[in-house]
Length: 281
Figure 1: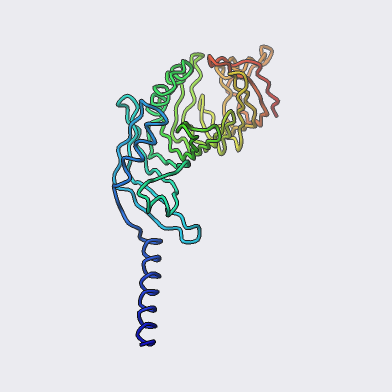
Figure 2: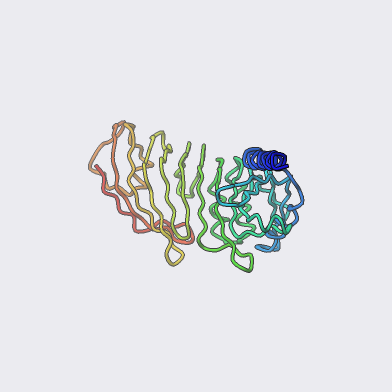
């Protein structure tokens, strides 16, 4: 009798271990929580909607938590879509057993989307006039984003959000005739703080690069500082005029140059550049 009980115990233990391994590695798919995720998104903004496929549940046995992840979601604002790679959140086993997906933290990753479409989407949600100006400058580019968001008790996004991503193959055209082409960089954004790394772009057939650029927002203006360098290239009249360099006593036609520049300047809420300071070698 004791031997049979021990056998049943081993079978049960083996089944539980196999189940834990299966839930931890393969997981299960369900659509029973889709409506709850939609309700959470709508709670943060009444004009938002989301289209979801099945949610995949993966067990984290060490934290006794469930990672809930949906693949291939789309989020909408006023019927304007934003294609997502996934929405991910972590919930307790207790909430799963109670059939209620309770979470205040969400990770969201987008697919590669047009930069202009992304700015249009953000402009639709915030209606800030400066975003309309920014949209007119953008001529080309794709962006990929990873967002980490925390919600308060009312479902609103807290100010401790974190956004990481990259911009590739960007092109900006400004009112002063200055064009930036082949723009590529990584970025890390928190509230009022913007960090850009591994920046590369081209203007007037001159290739520029920068390892780091910092932007801080204060009183609706943005303060920019960084270091930038360029490879050897012909110094153009357009660049001399934009940088307001007084070189009337020099004939620099077809002159090749390379430089390292430490700079800082201010951008107003109307995208006007002021207080430009450059220290160049």
